[in-house]
Image: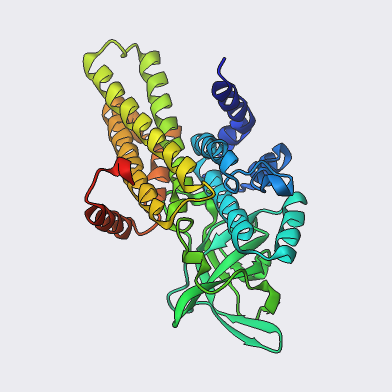
Length: 369
């Protein structure tokens, strides 16, 4: 058996309990704590640390990029809400590895080894955006974040603080205060269990060494937009789960000899494989040590390919399974809701426009990028 197949089977066996709990957690009050604990005990949170820090470099080292891709895909197949939190953890570990000083890196590595789940919270409450005031070696925060995924689960987050004079700042802040968390505003049909609610930072005082990197580092390429290959991998995993469920259902019904169904199966399979190949290229080239900022365009294009593959899959599943695909509480219905919402992340029209500008500027095929 090829090593990659063996790895995927190992990953699938590990996340099987997460897949088994997915329907139970499909609510705003759904508890993903046991699922995070499964990842914690399996060493997945620590796997995101660089090899120099004792991890496997998932998302932090070039050598760990393909394993990270497969882990996100497998977790996306099991439960997209859990995959969303794990991708946020991987992103936070990556940012600390890139921009943290020695003290910050050592402290974060120690936290992750103790089992901490990290996150990255960027979206501001439109009526009360996060601001900071620096004085006497302290940073005093005001304002709130919304769509802050993992309320009550994320122990520490990289909080993005906008700045009117340039790029934003990044702050490492504790995010485990129950009294500051409010998930009641998270009323989405999909990704319910992520508890992506509001977190109020008002009055929180941090030391000035909580600043991560320099102003504007957060937007540095190829790691800002370039990093979207990670959540695209989770998207792909969700679509792969729909495809596999469709195949199993058609087989059970004895419908696989229907030529219309076979045409749909072929269209779905080729779309998913196309996305996987694009994302493998992204993971290898964007995470390379010498990757230039222009490699970001690869990720923007891969996002387009992945979204198209996911939407093709959802449409084909609807046509193939008919009313069964809309049965409330079924795995297919839940996965479609979750995937439809997850694909909205983040500002897809702006990403498409940026990719178009880059292609026009290059005036060449995408393979040359």
